[in-house]
Image (spheres, rainbow, N blue to C red):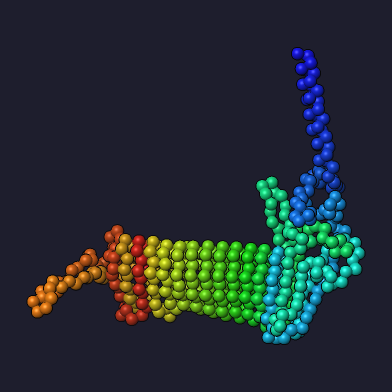
Length: 449
């Protein structure tokens, strides 16, 4: 038994030695010392670095990055703004293709397009702007009467290991050596491309994994954006296709949207045509809206004419001024106030809650049809029987036509009609020549009070 005990003790000693060696190895990280703050004297966690195309990224805090085994401090880096410009005509259309870089557009009164970016490097560099633009994968050229700008990613994008996989970080800056060699990325430094165009230009932008900013003074903009954010000032015309993105814009005269899985916010829109899915659409006012919506949340402060199809989700309008014509299913409609110039409301819906307050309207008529619905209103309902005619014969010997009443006639009243109310009724307030309401809604709760 003694030899076995000695072997066991020897094995335990080896394990203790290995553990001590491992602890000593992990304590070699640099120590930050701050006078008067005991907490800052603890060693920071070791950097977590992922190799992407052979390029190492920053540590968690972004205070330094690696090139092989070399640690480079952020304060040792130098920066330089590089740029290129070309002359253009006022009629030129500007195309921008972008990936993983923030785009900031500016305007000026010169007939030129200019692109600029900041490069970060170690040591002293003698590369020209043209050479640096090539290193950062940024190009500017003319194609006939148009201008093409391409901003691509550089040597892969930044990833960090979070314990459960990789996290993608777009817009981080690439760091180079003095001769333009890619040495890594730094998450604290952002890569942004600034594009200056003549005022009144037309832009066509395709961008992925990056943010885009548009100023006032852009005439028309066509934007296709994925996994990014759009910030735009007032525009004459906006054509936007968006997936997994957010858009915040100012006043727009005409807008056409294809929007999915994001949030769109606008101030004042004269005319809006929108096809949206799984999104939130909100605006201060819109004179005319044509919508096709699936499982969205619409918030409109003031609307003129509203038409379209709404399936699932909600349509909320603070004030409705002109008219509304909506069909769909499982879409709740809430109007808080109707304007004095409101002319018509036409709804074809089912399995929904609808609220349109008419207490301030003194002259209107209602036509309602829909079984299993509860309708509330300050008016007297006149049930309408559904009729079906039959002829019992033909020729001169035919029997008289028989009229079959298939609906349910019940006494008229106000407020709620039993459990579900009549499946079809009419109502008139005043002389009935004002606002016209035509509604079909099965299994709905409708409140006109």
